[in-house]
Image (cartoon, rainbow, N blue to C red; front, side):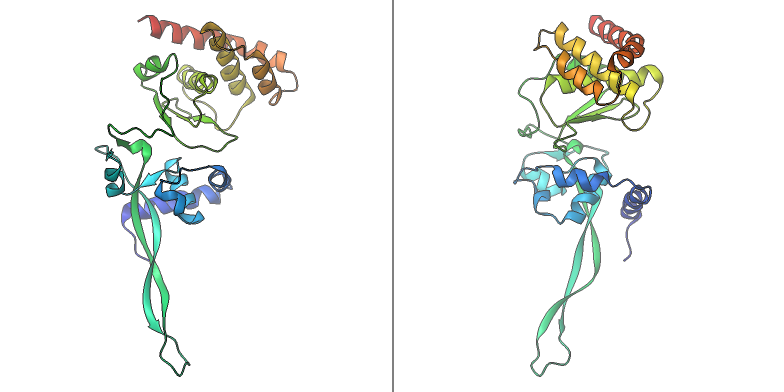
Length: 259
């Protein structure tokens, strides 16, 4: 199977991820409930995993498919690739009657684009909230990209280690505050450590609890305590160690909001 350079690069990226022992794309894809109107809902599991591994999201469509819902691919965005079998008709051997059957002789690469690579007046209602949370504009001003897309039910948001992109699978303000705290923490330290580290999760969750209180939302300190307890056997000690960084994160947000 001869692939284009970009398709080959995409395939190698996915293979490298699995070779490292990271099977999270499979488990995440299995848990994501994608809208039935999305073409990917009808894809094979292998193509879903390929798309998710490359894009970090599952709603990926062809150029024309996006145009059909009044969205266009942003200039400069790169495609990711899924594969479809190339089928030909052949005659069955050893049969008195000539019977044709379909035989797979290889695969061809199909370019598709993730939802975050598109723009348009039509909003993906199942992802985008009616109103954006507090500090949303502050995050944008700081260059933090915020995307709403389907995620696994036990992972309602994530943040790139450089703090430049937040992905949300929930409209819960608490989740946004948590991931925003991660983004600011990354800016302060240069970048985050990969994975869910006790210190980083404590900073994000405690900052989120403070912001929930500051903006008059339902008290979330109980949830924050339970969350931090799931990472540390001594949550009070973890919070004490994190307070210095929490203060820095809140100061950055306050200064950006005032400027």
